[in-house]
Length: 319
Image: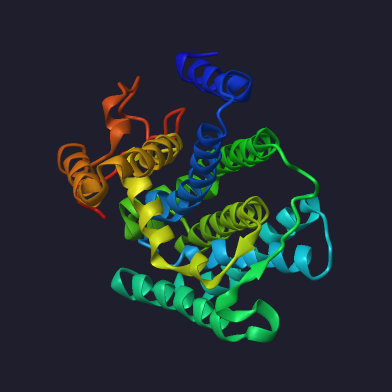
């Protein structure tokens, strides 16, 4: 077992023990939201960091997962342990459908079409009043009798660990290496037998599945889902987390999710200056650390395409 594995296991052990040390409900809520965003950022990173396509429609999968869990719970009475996996599967199905249409496009065309899909789903949620209750949203989503934030913390921690494991397996699979090869040079990758569409599709569907799981959890934790779950604010947060942490790495989005969640909360104390300070911090990190905070961590072997924490070389300015 090497130093990177020890660091990850130590971080996981600290996370497991966190609710026994921190009893403040507000701090536990921040930890829950940080893990929720960690899953979302990791799912987006599969497309942005490893495939190299800049998707702006990832909130579509978050929203589909959230509404799936909300409808199953509020209208049919299904328990959380069924609704969350079904939410992930439904989002994965949407991911396959949208990926089949969009992944043959590249560059700005891919960005525009993915953004359009998210906007279409937001309009559907806003206007299909008979199913979604329109702008009023769906309330009264069951929490299955859970009244303690510690239980929600361990649920989202389990989802985050599963998310990291699935991302790890993908990155070190032939498809993951193929996606990195396509990102670096599509034509060279094709010349050695890599199918760009298949590699990108697997990353896209896995990313959609993880975003759907996060959406299902969010619906039960908040007990409410409205059309705003499709809005660009979630998308902007995910992008910033991936960029700050380090796109094209496994650990970077996790670090970015924790830092951005804490920054957004604690900068509220400066009120009107909050957005200005937050923007300056983000700009400083992007300007001076274009590969994110992960570039500060010494790597054992720079020549490897994918190291243990999944840090693959990323071309500066490729995003």
